[in-house]
Structures are given as C-alpha cells and as structure tokens.
Length: 392
Image (cartoon, rainbow, N blue to C red; front, side, top):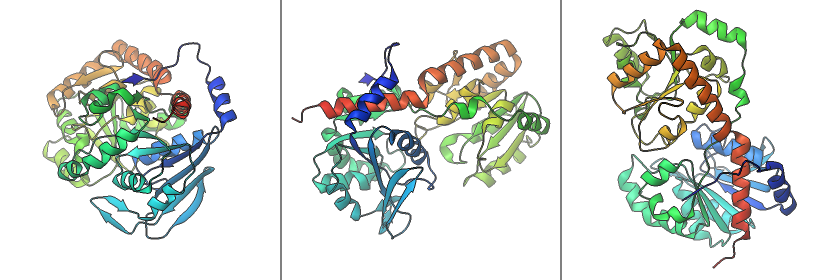
C-alpha cells in the first residue's frame, strides 16, 4: 500500500506545469453526475471541475432516463448514456460499452462501486491504462456483491493503480487487501474556504434560535448514520442536538424523540441547505454516529473540522476514524453505543479548553490532509506515474 504524500518542498505548481505540458487524456467513468445527488457524484464533480484545467478531460455516466445527453457542467464535458433498465440500484447502459471502446484516453479512471462501468470496460476491449477509485465495498447487497466479485477482481487486476481514500479502508476491505501492492491512499479533499469563513449574522441567528451547548449532525436519515443512537444519547446529554438532513427514517426518528421525551433537546431542520457553513460555526461539537462501514469516509467531518469544531465519531473499520483522530481532533467511541456517545459529548461540552484545543487541531488537520489542492496534486502525480509505466 502506498500513501501518497508530497515532501514538504513539493511544489504543486511544478507538478501542474508538467501535466499541462503533457496534456494527458483522461476519461472519468462514474455512475451518475450532478445535478444527480450523491456522495460519489459530489466527489466526481469537484475532482473533474479542477482536473479539467490540467488534463484533457471527459466524463461518461449513466443518464437518469433512456435518452442520451451531452452537456457541459462547470466546463466539464459530460456524456450521459441512456439507461435501459435498473437492476439492484444499478443502471443498465449498453451504450457505455461502445463509448469506452471508442475512447482514445491515455487513462480510464473508473469510480467504484459501479457494476455497469466494470462490465462495460471489460467488454469494450479498450487497452488504455486504468485507475480505479475504490469508494467503498458493497455492504448491503452481499449476495449480488459476491456474484459480481469475479468481474470486479478482473478489473482491479488490470488496473495500474487503485485509489483508496484512507489506509484504514485498505486494511479492512477484503477486496482491497488482495491488491495492496497497487493501492494509493489519496484522501478526499474539499474547498475548505467554504467552511472556514461564513456569514457571522447567520451564525448569530442560529445560536439565538437553537441555544448554546449545541451539537450538530448532518446526513441522510438512513440506517447506517446511527441517528437512533445519537437521539438516545441525548437523554443523558446536557445540551441540544440539531439534525440537518432528510430521508426515509424521518418519521421513525421523530417518533423516537417523542418516546424518549427529548423533543426539547432534539431539532430536525429537514433538507441540507446550500450553505452549511453557518451551522458548523454555530455549533460547539459535530457528531457522526454512523454504525456500518457503508460510511466509508465521512466528508462532513472535514467540513466541521475546517470550521474549527471537534468531532465525536465512531470506531468503524472504515475511514471514519482516520479523518478525525481520537484524543487529537475529537473523540472516537464504539458504534451503536448511546451511553458512550453521551459521555463523549458531555466531556467536550463541559471542558471548554479541551473543546477549543481539539477544534484548533481539527482545523490544522483539515488544512494539511484534506485540502482540495492537495487531492488534485496527488491525483495528477499518480496519473503521471501511471502514464509513464510500460505496459507488461
């Protein structure tokens, strides 16, 4: 396993200049692309928006319907091939095969999990070098995942490099552990400026509305986010919880707050607003109570850390505890443990100096490890390395 880090003297502009001079052709293959919502889609959008300035870039994804579409999204060429059917949440797009076959890209960068992209590449016969970003294992659909494993392994064997977002995931993934020799750790990067600064008047308004000793949690209301345990913890927490997000468990979670008589402590805001910065700055602590490795990384932790607040997260066998470090940028507790969550939250709420120290360290770690420019520089450096390899 290779952790991609630059020496302190690394000059990103020099790496960029070399890439611009060579002008590699890169084909990104994803499942969907914005305005389609999703974590992988958001990452792909940010990645491609920046990469287009350094390489000849194009994107192939599935359409939301059975019609093809070509458009530009923030300057990026995006081809959406028609979806003829959907099986187990996977779009079936036969036209993707020909599009990959006819591509003259130097590198095909495939974002996984994406069964259609895997099959399309294998069938296409295209011999371009492959880079795969392994966002997560297939967690819930274990039977289908096992059936598809031979095809996924075939793609990974052909890959010149596999990008993982944390060393933890390389070590804990049964699939990646077989390909450690070609794994490169490039953590997600975000535009930190979007969260380091915000509208102070909006922060003041939020504090007036929700009060002090405020805990923030952001995410879809789905099983693996662990909101149930966070709400249960609030019966013992000397503070208030603000949950930002919506999803299929909305009614169930609302009912739980009533059952536990914590409606005065727990507030739901609904959909995530366009600008979350003021919410982070209004909060004292950020909580990510996820209970399954479906939470492969937890980008929201970076957003909170950039805003300078400590994180309480869970000790999943994924990248979650890699992002915010226990006793350094926050506290890490066992998953699905409401009592442990309550104890950690109370400890930080009651100890202002500790909370501020962790928040300062969180901001520094976000700037050092999870800056967008760093992710782009590491990705470009990997592309150059792959392009220089001689095919065996």
